[in-house]
Image (cartoon, rainbow, N blue to C red; front, side, top):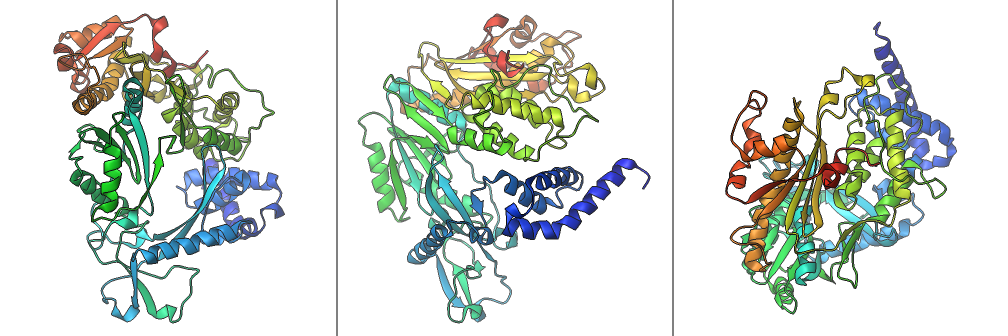
Length: 589
């Protein structure tokens, strides 16, 4: 091939394949045997090749990067046996098998008794050091999983989808719990998925690491749902949903199916974690726990008491009535991945102008850390507790396919900002007089620049909004619009429409909560004040009139007009200097 770019990619691919056998064995047995500089250089080249060959050498890429980072807490059986604390994992393996056998999760049978037309699936071990939010090791976990990839659709599984609670619902109830002094309780199911029965026959090979007489002639017939099966989460979800409905939580929220409404309490479900909100002094939670323990399902769980951590997030309740949510451990891991320590000077903001662009032909990255991993960590941070990172993370995330030096530096900028704000998070200090508010802003074609003038994506406008209840931020967003806006009015109107897709379901949720807990909502409807700083957008939202410059706007963006007409939504002007959502459309300065 005469194309120099293709020839370069091919030569890199050939070199990486040549290194594959020696690298995989060397890194797996003794990571220190190869100089770190060589590993970093090969890893960087591997990442470039991986992009063009659709991850065909991803296993090598993962091995190199995990060696460089050195922060992996999840292991296969082979990797676990090379760890210094392997004895702790082996103890966890024994406990896992004993727990399964004590609960009759499988039956050991002769292989010859298995129907000939039924294929068996493999068993897989997964190991993890489970840490608390501050980074300390809580326990060593060994999980025996079934190889779900060997299942066949229509034979031993069908539907797989299982919902999880939305963080919007979690934050809403946390804010309401402060205002109305609700009590919270956290419940964690033990070996959750295997508590559900199977409705099909599945046969599994004996787990590696455990030998018994006549092993080759034996096989496991699963009696219960097992981790790793394609429909494992759905099977447990169905069982849990039926169990809650049978215990008085018959109503699911129409806007969030993982919010169960009871007589004096509300239950949030995230896979095998429950959070219960109840009136102060009510016995609803104690009654639920007792009924779960004594029911026919024989649920096994632990009562973790008052909510103080949730999905890796520290939840601190202060004496002044405020709640603070932080993710210090995730920040530490993020900084470790990108190589930032305490000696690095912090930065006052997570991003600066100019905005990022593709930088075609620009300088290649200097370091070998996993760009996608860093984006994933920072994205979870901005979604849960650090809204000020949203704009910076989103624009860096756009270039995961082929990141250049400028994109790498943008991640370092985020890291240096987090270095100086490790202990910061989001604080809920409700002001019940404010009610439900939504601040919306847009940056019209803000990504365009002379360096990348022909890039069609650069002329997309950016939407930014934050939805607040009683002054507490419930959800926020910074993202590019999916089509080109032709004016500032159109860009603002599209942003307004996108924001109200979150507002309208939340109004429905608040109405449903009000039926369980009276929460002093304005009558006769829940209303939302929407603050917008573009007069043309406000006019277009309130009046059904068309002009030559606005008649092309798609009907999908007019979905909220009826809610404006009946007074559920109130669109109000706000000065640009007071527009809170401005931080989601432009770099902080």
